[in-house]
Length: 278
Length: 280
Image (cartoon, rainbow over all chains, first blue to last red; front, side, top):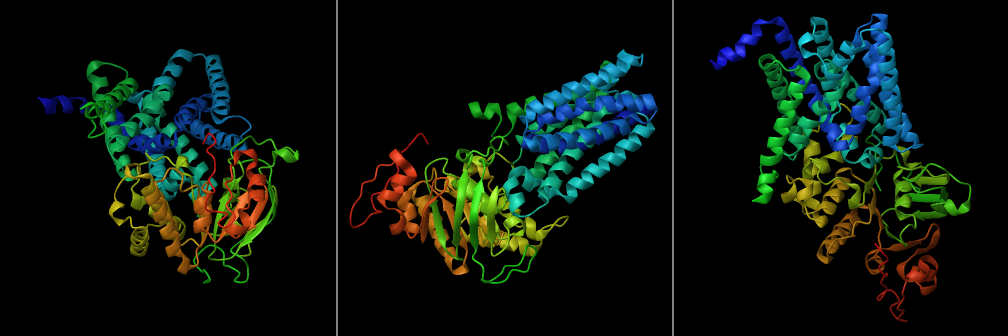
């Protein structure tokens, strides 16, 4: 009975594709999300997600793969925000806020001029997991591999710049390069997740699993492992819920992740609310 | 002092460990980037001094005197507006022998790392990019933890440690880094007496290795008791030298102004010095 419940959706190819995409995003997002949570970059992540819109629209108008437009725009924005905050002309969140609103508005304006405004914008905002194509999967796989490989290679360096940037400088690590590299990885991750959860819910996929994981462990790599576990569980469960309850896939994934977070927040060993009260 | 061959830049044996030549900084790190040419906005002005290898120097002065800025200059994490900072004869930018132990308030103690992880971070420079810690690195981490008597704490998350233990872990990180110049930014603040004594005992144990120590501190009494030299700083070097020569009423009045109550005793001028608390 339960097996049947699990297997039945798998006879549809689009569900299988959706599950594969959800798993990949469920791995990459939480890994990058760990850095976002630890470094307090949630707002920046949210901004990058929105900023990508004009890139996507231009790619759409030119007939390019949407991911390519998003990738270019995301990388440019990541480096631009990095440079702006370095100059300290404005406070970081102010600078990000200005750029984010301006570029998102530009994207929406361009999109509204193309005609099928409502449908496309909805997909962009909330993702369309059930519409993932084979090409999307391939791109996602390539980009996800790139992100994860880079994290593995620079794991200890990213740990140092996140924990104590001064140490990174006195050890003469390429601190600036690493900081920008991490920004670019965040941008790439956002591009990957665009299809799954969309812009509006991106932040949940980046932050929520990592936040739950932070309550469960005391070491960086195990925090990542927990976050990935929660991410994959949320992705897969979300797809099934979407199938059976006929709700939009993106919100379904995010709601599962949020539920996991709430449970963790309440019942995490030693650190959960329940333990604190006892 | 041995010549260092691993990565980093080599040392010129004849040069002092640390030398400042007419160093000025236009504004404190972290404030706005509007540099004014108005002399009053200088965080540090015309700082010149040198420290030989193996010396222990306390940097004292009122809040905002530029103690942290001076340590950052020595570490090469900020650049002077004018003048030169030299470590063993060359700028600090390429040395990996400098360890900076930040103020405790600068660290996110909830970060998911153990004490051993923090000490291993000190090895990151030597391990090199794209490589994993070797057995030797792990051994260095263990030895470093043992030297600060913190081996039993190795697997605790850093937020679970006491203030004194946290400070010792960061000193162990400096040891793992094989630091020859140790910069400590207010490590004694908030520590009880036994923890402070432990820090000084560790400092004493570094003497045979020729490690040079600069420590920013508020505690004039401890500075006088435990350091070879004291630098009295208030945006400029008010006095620098042996404790008894530096901690004179005139110098202290000059550095602290009215915020200092000096109970002078003719025979032991440093014994009764205590800084008045001022909203710290």
